[in-house]
Image 1 (cartoon, rainbow, N blue to C red):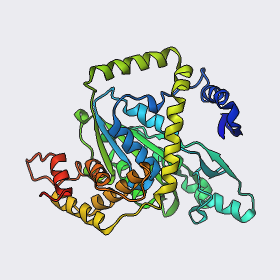
Image 2: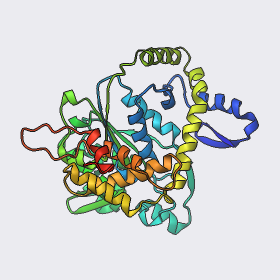
Image 3: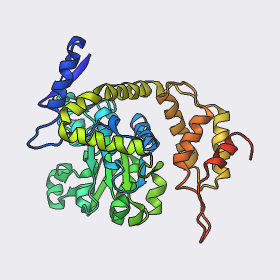
Image 4: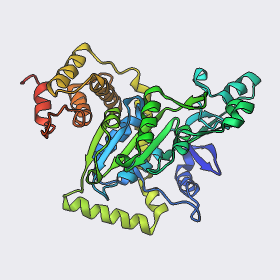
Length: 374
C-alpha cells in the first residue's frame, strides 16, 4: 500500500494504482504559486559519506547529529532538506505546539496533559519536517518568550513557543552554524543534553520537550565552530567538489532536467526514493535487536585511546553509529567495518591537539588499530 497527501490529508491507496498515486503525490507536494519542488535526495551524485551520516541519524536520532563541513555548492542544503522526504511519518498529538509523542505520556507538555485528563486527546500523523534556525535569530525566537505579567495571571499559557518547540521530534537545520551567537549555542547545548527546553524569567519557569536531530553546515573558510558545540555534535563529514569528470557532467545534466521538468524528474527518481524509505523503516525496526559484543566495545575503546580523545563521548557515539550502520545494512551484529566507518566520522573533530600542532586524522592508523597491527 502507498499513501498520498492532498490538502494535509493522508490516504491509503491500493497497489494497482501505484503509478497514478506517484504522480498525484508529486503534484500534492507543491503549489507552484507558493512552494518550490524539492530536489530528490536520491538524485544527488556522489557525497556518499554525507548522505550516510544523515541517514544514520534519521534512523537513530540518539546518535547526536551531523556537522557538514565543506565548500559552497556541494549539495549540503539540498541533502538536508531532501532527507525529510524519505523519512516515515510520525504520530503527534493533534493541535500540539510541541509535537508531543502520544507514546510517551510522561513527556507530555501541559496542554497535552490537560487534554489527556479531559479525554479530548486526539492523534494524527504528519511528515517529519526541517526547521531552520537562522544565524541572526533572537533569543526569544529560539527558546520562546514569556510574558511575565500575563504569566502571573494565566500561568504557562503566557508562553509563546520558539524554534526549539517547533523542532521537537524534527530536524533542526543550522546553516553557517559556526556563525551562531553564543546565547544560541548555549540554548542548543542545554536542549540537546536534556531533551528539554527551559525558559526562566523573573522566577517563572516553563519547560517543554525538545528532542531534535541537529544538522549544521558550514564553510570552514568563514571561521571554526565553538569547541563546546563541536564536541556535542556526534558526526562530522567533509564535503568537497567532485573531481571525477563523468560525475560532474552527470550533476549538470540532472540539474538541467530537474529545472526543465521538476515533477517529471521527481517521478523518475521515485523508485529510488521509495527504496531508501523502505530501507530506513526496516533499519528502525531492526535497531533494537542489533547486538554489540564486549569485544566490539574493547575495539572501540582501543581506538579512542590510540587517537587520544578527551572523555568518553566518542566511545558512546562510535558504538551507537556502528550499531545503526549494521541495522541499515540489514545485519544483527556489528562488524569491525561498522566500527571503522563510525570512527571515521566521530573522531576527526575530537582528537586532542597540542598547542601549535595540527594533528590530522589517519584512516590508515585507524584500520591498523582495529586489525591489531599497532
